[in-house]
Length: 211
Image (cartoon, rainbow, N blue to C red; front, side, top):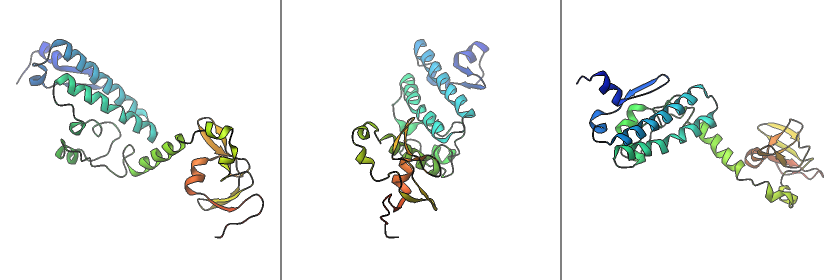
């Protein structure tokens, strides 16, 4: 099927290097305002793609990727089709994602999603970082302001072992930006690291734990 230039512009969405033609069979069934709204949603999608291309931080890439789903839901509304995340495609058809495209096409319409364990967006390392970030965010500093004893698990003077290193904490837990940290002989230690992976060898009074 061939189109005139005017027809091409009717179906085209362009932003930066991104240039696509919408499905003519679906667009022709839509009202003009729906088509314009749909094009605006695609432009928002391409703006996210543009940000992802230059972003290298795993957590920021993950959050940008998460912002794609509401746009795909809106696309489905504009097209007048079933609003269902199981039919979404751009979560893996986006910059930096290395999850298997064809495998995910084959299961589209189901709740199955195939992930590459090394994917910078959906891989295991990113999942671990997100989980740790959520744990850290759930530590509410306001709970400790008037109740410093709640931080008694990790106190100034404690000798700990973390990732094969032994060192002393040089402060109790305190708020540092958006995090709770303890100072130590090795620098600032995120409190969530102490909770998850550290082992108390000896407290400031010399009381030792059994190894």
